[in-house]
Image (cartoon, rainbow, N blue to C red):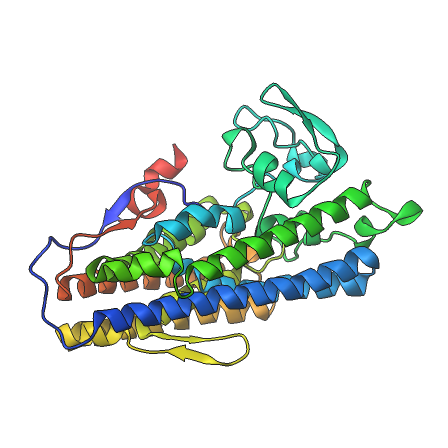
Length: 421
């Protein structure tokens, strides 16, 4: 998501003269751009597979086709989550990311919800709009024709309607909601349970407006594909993201470290993990409808390690690798490099334990239950590892004698009392 702006944790020291190192910074940046291009290309490939599954579902609304579409969505998250490390330091990614991965969302904007969900609020007048059930509505005093649910309508009219960030109408999480529906299990085990008949035609339709629900799911999937096509191209030869990165070598290295530190600290350790533990709120899950949060956390962590080690394993098993940031740091201070590599491995171990526990039946929802000491320990061990990893990233910045870097922060880490105010 576009992060909730809280404190900014400044985790590096003041500027110093550039350190002389044997490694070629341009080669390191090229590897980074190659990994970005590969990750977004794999995300696109996975989204195209998701589209095939969605087409099968809306053509034949069977439980088997719904299960296949859900599996395709989960598979699509694997490469995409590994690209989140390219945010923060690269403005072109951060400015775009809210279209494809914004969360949390007020799902009542999109479709029917349980009565306990409530209605419009002072913060969001459209929290329960249910555009699928309403082919026209009034937005900011203007009558809106929503008779055709198209990618353009979703991106240009409905997404962040009335400039409210929770009005997420596009991207992975809108599609997730349309495939799973609300997760009404609270902190008990279980994901959303939308029936396949929500896409059936005629009298078999449940939930009403099955034709418009199919339109929405199709349009959102098509829009995701076009957005990923655009971003993959930005990292290709001559693309704006690659060109900007390579234009200034020191700024490019700073972008790499900024993405690593901000995702590790404020975004993942803070907003995505510790905040949910503090609030004991399953609504703070990243993939809350599908109960896939454990995988999102794991692959976010892997993306950080990919950038540092200069190696990415694609969805087809191919390996993209080259000159690494690790080698650059090692040339400046081998001890710092060894420490950071160990910290990254420790984090992946903790995230792996969380992932394994969820896959064994101890879902992330259950881990968030108040008083569940085992669940809290699993999450907070990973949070602590991410925070420790960020301190090692800070030392890498110092070793490279780069300019001061500000990493994204979170009240949950920097000012916990503010969370409850």
